[in-house]
Image 1 (cartoon, rainbow, N blue to C red):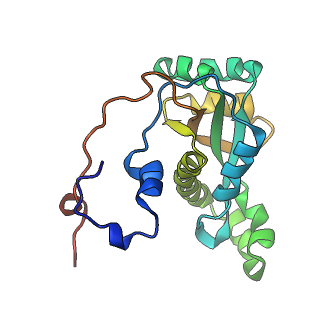
Image 2: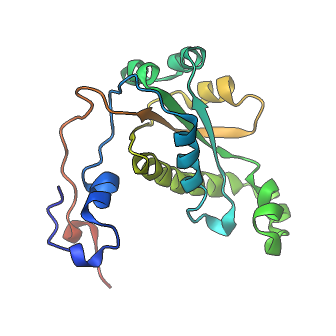
Length: 204
């Protein structure tokens, strides 16, 4: 539980919702074999569609790895410490950014359709896509928690290997791997400290 002073009157979310999404939520390292259903995945993605991105570009792309065959393809590209729990998780999400995200601008921001050409010619457009996909990835973790599942986000993987294995026919680059499911026995490492308001914030 947070060590912050009582701030209940300032939240639109009740205490149970704050605990589910933030203060009691943990990154899971073990999962039960209870399946994650199609509608649960759709419910997650429905929420992920709405967070803010620059110029409404929405560069995040998702691959859900669910089958034993898919897990066997994924396992060699995970760091050793992440391999077994990834194979065991009911679903693993590969979160990537679309290098050609600008092709969707006429659809997603029709009033500024000309941005498509400007970004297509910009050698730094990948940085914009990566940053905004990372914003969406944070919301993805909250969306997983919001449907009552645990998320196990991981950066320990061979991004080039996953790109070759799962994105070879698409111009997309993986940025995060997230295991999804019901937490299993001993799913949590001990809770580590967080910085206080005073350590996080400066006022000018």
